[in-house]
Amino acid sequence: MNFTKLVPNIFYADIQSGLKIFIDCLEFSIGHDEIETASPFCVVEKDGLRINLFQNKEYAEKDKPEFRLVTNDIEEVYAKVASKFPELLHPNLSQVTLRPWGAKEFAIMDKQIGIIIQQW
Image 1 (spheres, rainbow, N blue to C red):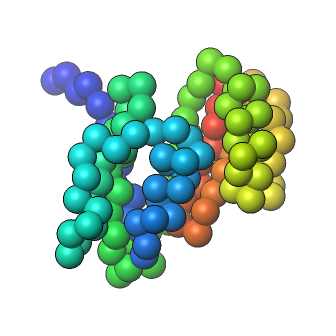
Image 2: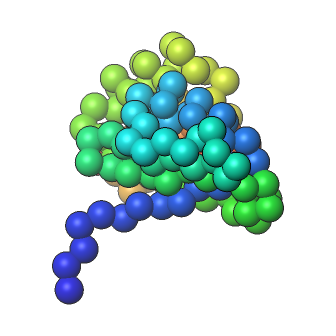
């Protein structure tokens, strides 16, 4: 058995929130766009990663995912996020911090998702 990608689905009450964190803040691009349809949906992509964003209030209320994005230059990512989107920094991990398990991390969040940016 061989797998090549993991593509998470994230549900938002308003897909514009997802576009802010992924497109504006994390500089993903839209690879597939059905945002202006009756059931808004898109695929955001960056560096071989893909994430499906859906607008579905019912599912958004039930699902609050958290995941990690691993980078080789956490200081660069942090500088961009902190300078342009300080409101997205998670209050419990708003600075690059060396964690007890040996990774450097900081976190961002919106109403729907928590994302930990990590460098080993």
